[in-house]
Length: 231
Image (cartoon, rainbow, N blue to C red; front, side, top):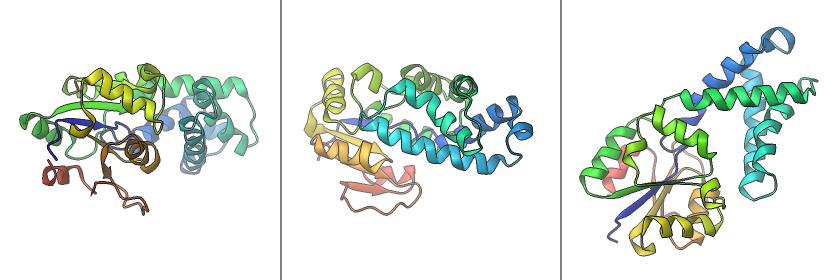
């Protein structure tokens, strides 16, 4: 298959969301003196936040909650675990988190190298992300990778979310790419891989964490450098 257009996911695929999110929430936690009023154990707090964040993102992916609810309720549910139901505090923390997060710049190892390798081979690179428009562009600019992508398709821009077919169809339309010459590269088995497969695209599952899987992507890699074996 002669691919020409490579569609990347951003979070957890190129941009190290876990590291950047951990650092961001640590700042928010201490800025709001939660180590004094809530718990001294930030690691446990982060684990609860991560649990709620994942649950709510899964619901958001499938259109079951709105973006604005996701933004603050992941904080609120975490506070509730510590018997604090303050909605104003949850909203304040959410605003701070989303302001700080795009300033973080940790990428997965070999991100810049693989992007430049692919561009030298004359592939056209794009992004498809469910992240918020303003936040995702902040991540790209501050990480100095925004200039590498011809099209950046966010769920807000497309008015559709991965894994729904509409966002992949929209990405093909705005990029001028044909389905048979395009491939989706991402870490999320549902949003990126199954979604793209259902939309008729080949896929690369970037399995950074050695996650078990039942579906069969076109390719599987465990490190971004392994993309050189495919392209």
